[in-house]
Amino acid sequence: MKRIVILISGRGSNMQAIVQRCVQQRWPAVVAAVIANRQGAEGLEFAAAHGIQTAVVDHRAYVSRAAFDEALAAAIDPFAPDLIVLAGFMRILGDGFVQRHAGRLLNIHPSLLPAFPGLHTHRRALAAGCKVVGATVHFVTPELDHGPIVMQSAVPVLPGDDEEALAARVLATEHVIYPQAVRWFVEDRLVIENGLVRQLDGAVQVLL
Ligand code: GAR
Image (cartoon, rainbow, N blue to C red; front, side, top):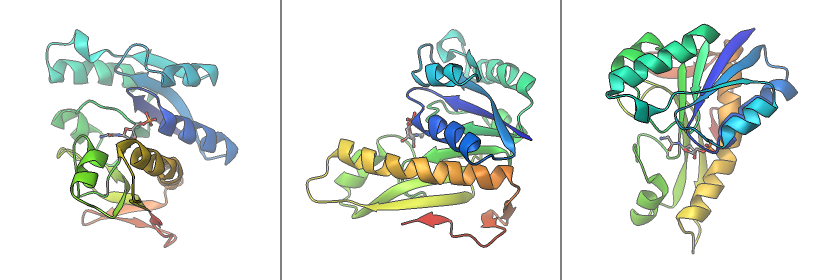
């Protein structure tokens, strides 16, 4: 059984999708804990209601990123995770933390990376006149929103779309590709070769 720790900052809908699929599809894995950097992160309630241990490491209580990373590591380590899943976790993790967990740290970002790393991805995609947008699940490396891509989803930008409509259309696909990527990881179906991720069964790594 692989042990998963999920980090969230708010709503946690991706975390919920992963928790549900893990049980429904009987992955060889258990979500051991859900940890938030914000007291009152909405997703914590869902996790607790599903019998998952929760914790809060409030970033505002720490003077530096390094001190926060250290406290976060101290909260995570007792759960001995094989995989740490960033699911709407809106804090940048320091190089030391990332390097320590290299190859077992996944993130989802609401853009077709390498386009639009950082914040306000949908607003920026609309401003750029993009006709296709999407989401990316990737392994985390020290460079923000970079790292080997596991899976992507693509959706059209439709006439009249605003930021909210686009975010909702992309989010629905996140709930498909993130559980899929995590499942592949816990089933040992992923390898990283020369910075690229290969799915060992030759499965299609894009949702169109
Ligand atoms: C998701 O759209 C996720 O891709 C995004 O935050 C949202 C969290 O929603 N993540 C980032 O922007 C990370 N840079 P959720 O809390 O309902 O899963």
